[in-house]
Image 1 (cartoon, rainbow, N blue to C red):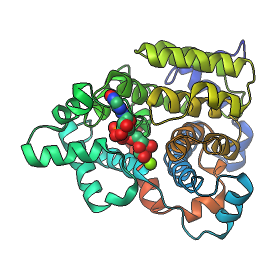
Image 2: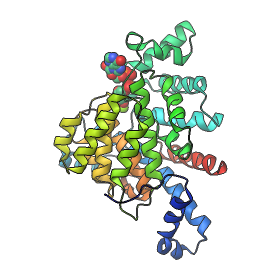
Image 3: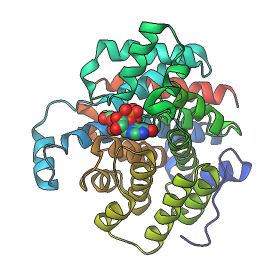
Image 4: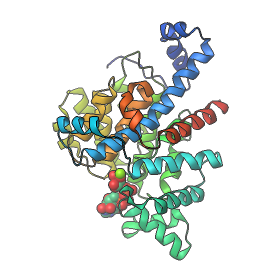
Length: 346
Ligand code: R7I
Ligand code: MG
């Protein structure tokens, strides 16, 4: 969307634009300007975390029902949407932030380990459980254990990016967003590329959160901002590729083939962002784009739908899917507590 200026989160101009663009919606409710913004942001916080969990759960189903028709039939019949480690860790990160009020890596690691012990069947890859047992066996810190993985380089998997939405919500307007995402990643992902995945996804959430869905999404500025925000060449070059594919309106299948969509952060994250940008006005189209073209489907769904939900809000997620989501009340509670923490600090 050339020529559209990206409004930086927290700027007076951004807030003014959000308020100005919602007069009909809010006038119907007879609310004051201050209340208008609260409703808008609250809805976006829940949209982000519920959206991510729905994307994760439906993405996991797509491993077994890989055509859209079969998946939709299954979704109609299904009683409950079961999420995977992506959401379990997003919940853990949200819980730790709420309990401590800041990012405490030891508390976060403990929370992750505790949740893993209770539910080891959620589909974790090898990295996090290896770290948990190393901490138990040797007493080292989580961050030290994370540094020792994969020959001392740490993990470049997408596991830090997939769970980073609470950081993007809580620190959306902070100049220290990168550092916060880095801390949240460091208990399991020490590799600079794994950390970069968490930071870029947190920034994507924060930018989407502060854009008004009543207006066209400023795609070009969004990608430029993410390229500038990324710190590794691996991530930057894949974001440049994303920029070209979006500009050329490349089909999802071709984009998936070119970017890749494996568990490596610089593959799955840019493809998830491609799906959000291609279908910015539709949560369901964004979801299907993320999960129907192979690769790390649950995590592609979680990352794309966190950004989509932060932009479009809770109501954009089909009601039936929200109703079937496992543990939804707790996820919404975390979103609302994070919202209160964020607005208290303003
Ligand atoms: O990143 P992580 O927590 O999870 C990745 C995916 C997500 O979809 C989850 O939902 C889960 O299903 O799996 O898991 P890690 O074990 O840290 O990284 C994932 C995989 O990437 C590893 O098991 C390795 O195969 C590979 N990998 C690496 N290989 C070589 N060198 C990650 N980092 C490295 C590396 O530095
Ligand atoms: Mg998973």
